[in-house]
Length: 539
Ligand code: G1P
Ligand code: ZN
Image (cartoon, rainbow, N blue to C red; front, side, top):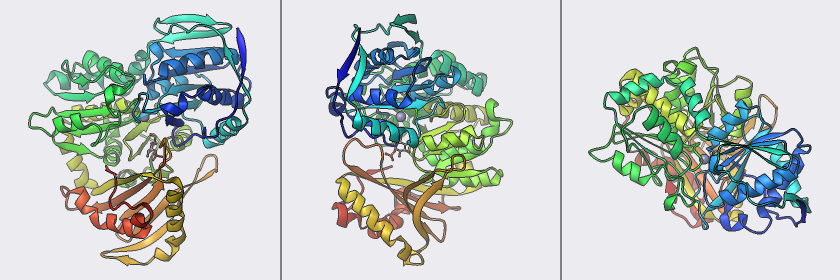
């Protein structure tokens, strides 16, 4: 039954910010996924006695890739796989299962918030025993392996039935099919005050949760409607579909348009939320009100004492460097450390493992805590519901009170998409080159105080990572430039802009940041390099 198949390398299997992510058309080429998986197995080495968690977000090719994975795992001598029923698992649920079962790692077939389907994207997230995605030291080795691969091992058997819960065997390998939802729900019940949230809904509180036809549907139905008693119909788009029903499963103001329209209408429910394809991102909305992810992290940190699992204290917090400084002002007032790390969840993992932080987040709609080693969309939604239940305030009241206490960081991200990779690299190196000469210069009302690449020295493993270029101004304004590491074709330049205001809380962010945006365009010579006079996506 064991087959050894000769193969030739693909040269594009380097993992980015969050695993391997490519166009479906690329991933479905002969031996593409096999090469990549075998390279991971080769890098790990001796697999005997190893157990892995396996699932995916239900997108196109999830079913095919997971069958290949199972047959290759058995052929490579893996001891046991724990698989979500029908091949489904959200990224946070997978991280929980890795930690709870102390497995050697896990695999989630997902391209996260990227569109799915034949013309969409596919991906593989590989997590180690830490419960978090493989660090660069490991992903670099895997990449080297993909460049030298000559064969892969696979069992020549028919497909495995993933629909029935229970245990079966393939050769010597044990396959355990589990309900993907149960253990995740138990974890949430141990963190939050479910009875307070239940009372909130019993009192008439209304919510709309959009699962965007992706993996969180079954989790959300069980938690919000069945257990917490949110009215039937509160959870929408809850069937995971291979093409996400044509939706782009990224919870932001642009792609979660239906939800946003409803939340900004006159009969909006009290609370709105959405998660992404694999369930690790979140968006929080109130009635005609949007909470930026940077503010959400700050509000969560300020209110930790309201949550049963955190009420005895938290270690500290961390944000990606590109995320606004709002959370650090909260940390400072509470005498907690606040770390800034490169973009990508894996940088938070060391800080969690060494008990330096409890909460962390990114501007890109990712928020989480040390309950697992990934960001967690439903966790963030429950955190807000718990704050609302405990304070009796609306989303807007909670946020406004927060701004009055800590000031408001007006913050936006501007994405310039589909840039030729060489041109994007030239733009960045040109900018980096001129950073030193910018210090002390004044552009309209803003004077530059600092201009340098962001370099992170990990306090745990002493590794050093460079990520993006940062320009600081004398009154706390900040512009950060970096290239995306998750695209599946071409380059995306991200420009992150922040400006702090202690008095005006209801200005239009885009207008407030316009002056700084113009400076970013000028300094980085964006039009000269890209031909673009404005960003493609503003969030
Ligand atoms: C993007 C986000 C980043 C996030 C990653 C995975 O990466 O910016 O915060 O960790 O997706 O969800 P980027 O494309 O910017 O490299
Ligand atoms: Zn995701």
